[in-house]
Amino acid sequence: DAKTTQPTSMDCAEGRAANLPCNHSTISGNEYVYWYRQIHSQGPQYIIHGLKNNETNEMASLIITEDRKSSTLILPHATLRDTAVYYCIVRVPGTASKLTFGTGTRLQVTL
Amino acid sequence: KAGVTQTPRYLIKTRGQQVTLSCSPISGHRSVSWYQQTPGQGLQFLFEYFSETQRNKGNFPGRFSGRQFSNSRSEMNVSTLELGDSALYLCASSLAGSEYQPQHFGDGTRLSIL
Image (cartoon, rainbow over all chains, first blue to last red; front, side, top):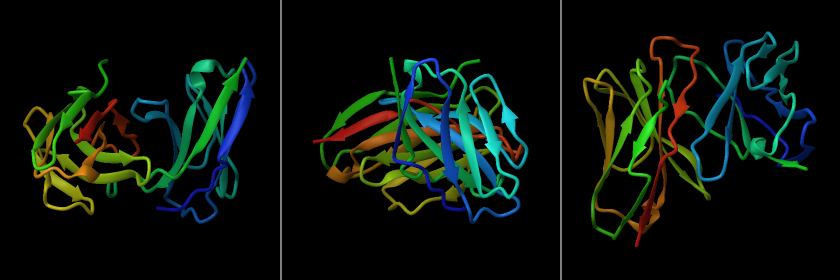
């Protein structure tokens, strides 16, 4: 699986959009980008995934650059409950199921 | 739809004992994977089961084993517990056969070894 690089931490004011970047410059053509988050003492929560088109669901939007070397997870209206560690993963689906999380971005949403 | 359920949530054992952890996947999910998460090592893959067969295995000693039942529920067992086995053990399920579907995690079993 391709390696990813994320900032260690970010802050966001409640109600504002949180934009979390991820660099995956070695991504190959059939690797998907997945985002998870983990709130303290809970299991990782799936957020969204995509291949090359932008994706949106009820939780977030995923913007993937045209060259697919980076992506941004957007939480449109962050709340205090969005405070968590966010993990960006790239992997080939349907292959070995094992996921590898990097160090992620610790997002702190403040009043 | 109920999520992935893991039992128990917390467990305290002593060195040398053995432990069995249980995982009930999301209804309809046939693939179950197990992970160990520690502050130092992060998330590490243990094994994956599909249709009662181990399909993938991580780099853990033979003390770690698992199985899957016909209803897709899974258990993992750790024998001869060591202090270093203290960790959060996570189970994740997915719609095997649908290659693009993500894994969904339970809240884990926190195992402490004294």
